Image (tube, rainbow, N blue to C red; front, side, top):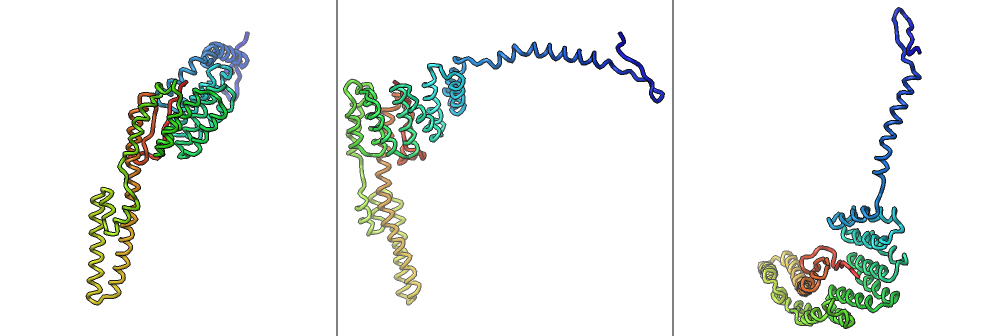
Length: 332
């Protein structure tokens, strides 16, 4: 068999390879490589439900919430008939909630609430929806969601959970009376588990919190700095008194020396500072009351939520970030 042939062109001798033979060798090599890699590729593409679910849970535990949400979604997509799909849906919503993606969490929880997985899953989805509304600074919708749940699902255990969460929402708002009424609706069987009696005992102290009357603060500010002094803002009181007294003295001196135009101008400026002093005192009274409420709510959280698997956000009246709400780790 002749593998190559020799030709002479232009006085040079060239060897041309046997093209058919080379192609055959190349195809053989490619076939062997593909045959060897196919089992490896198949093993790499194989997805195991338990491994996928465990991986997503591990990401969640490591606080990689967005990655966890993506992996739980992958689990739901590849294993739609797995019994853990409803739980994975809840974890998707919770992951977005912890990541601060409240609208995505709301969408995921709402989808789960209408999927027909049973009362327990529906209730937990509604609790997450309510929590999302809280974190989005919509407590009215959060409360309405919980009331809708009680009409949708008739279950004493869920009713107790709703009353418990409503109590905390009202407590967040500083509405002590409604919070007390909600906590008292929890049935006797679940009161010890939820720590209702200690909560009510501490909540009774809310009426004794120091408060400042905004109207009285404004009246006392008729004497510059009086309202600030009443609100325990001693430095502000000193500044208000000093600025207003200085402007009054400057206007008096201007009029006394015959500078009518200057005296009038300073008088207008002094009037503005005087009115600002009154408005500031009223604002300080409201701020004082919010701070007292915030500190009380923070104390209630530390005493009654930390040991029960709750994650919470600080109250806005006490050096808090923007989101004034609770985020609960809900279990049944």
